[in-house]
Amino acid sequence: MAVTKMRAFWNERVSGLAPYTPGEQPRDRRFIKLNTNENPYPPSPLVIEAIRRAVDDRLRLYPDPECWELREAIAERFGVQPEQVFVGNGSDEILAFAFGAFFSDKVLFPDITYSFYPVYARLWGVPFERPPLNDDFSINPGDYTGVALNAGVVFPNPNAPTGRGMDIATVLSIVTARKDRVIIVDEAYAMFAKENLSVVSSVATYPNLLTVHTLSKFASLAGLRVGFAIGNEGLIEGLCRMRDSFNSYTVDRLAQAGAIAVMKDKAYYDNVTRKIVDTRERVSTALSSMGFEVIPSDANFIFIRCPSLKGADFFAYLREKGILTRHFNAPRIADFLRVSIGTDSDMAAMATIATIGC
Ligand code: PMP
Image 1 (cartoon, rainbow, N blue to C red):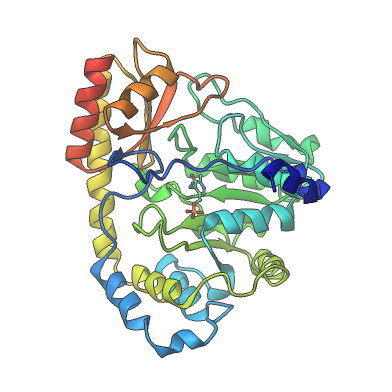
Image 2: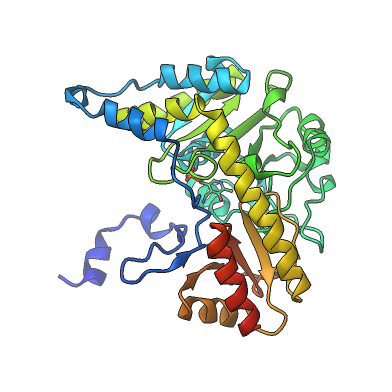
């Protein structure tokens, strides 16, 4: 039967979905892959070893649905209580649960931000507004603090795809202005910031603050699918209710074993993160001096504009030369590309080819 005919079986809900488009995972050709903010370095050897050790006949058994051992390891690493930690199948899953659990009448997020947010808002039928970023792509905190707004808030810090970070005092000014609403701070890229901008240590103070984290970026584990959230016990319980109304076993045994090992090898990951930050700073300076516009980044990617090519043409040119980046055909950012930070040699190749083309 033709696919279009089979679509006749869709109900209104699925017909009305507007799904997210993830970055391309090429199968046919080798690229320098700078399009999905993966980490160019391998996970800690302790993580690989822990996953290997978990491959045995215990796979017969369901994993711990509450992920207690992992929650304890995360709690110890981040100086919080295990009851303040939720673990999910990637942070996308946690964001999906959080939108469903905590937002109802309205949610605010910037006009330029992670493009999954409007997808989740539509999925749960939550109306949203998108205050515009300032011209330099910074968030205007005043857009989120008005008492009359009556809305939840979510934003990444640093923001994606711009890479711009917001300092802790400014984030907390939003959290404290709206004590009656949940504020989700998506800290997917916070480990790569020049100065600490994480508000994790404030979750005990602000019951309306939920921070969301992922092992896909700093921990080199995009393939394992583990994310976690830190917040007040009440918010964590809300997320558990969502999970247990959907799929109680979202994080498998191997993922739990690997993620526990991440929390125990801070030294390895601090070193990897430092290398990525150094590479980012070097390539940002080099591209700026060659005439590219480079938005100052606190993340493991940079947002750049070629002085002579339209964004879509710059993207196509790099792709043709074997370099995969991310282009968002959206207002205000259509001439920019988001380029993930790879190894020094990946980035040197990218910068040389970009400079020739621009
Ligand atoms: N938040 C932001 C801002 C992201 O860019 C991403 C990665 N696409 C995620 C969350 C989701 O990451 P993951 O599901 O791999 O944990």
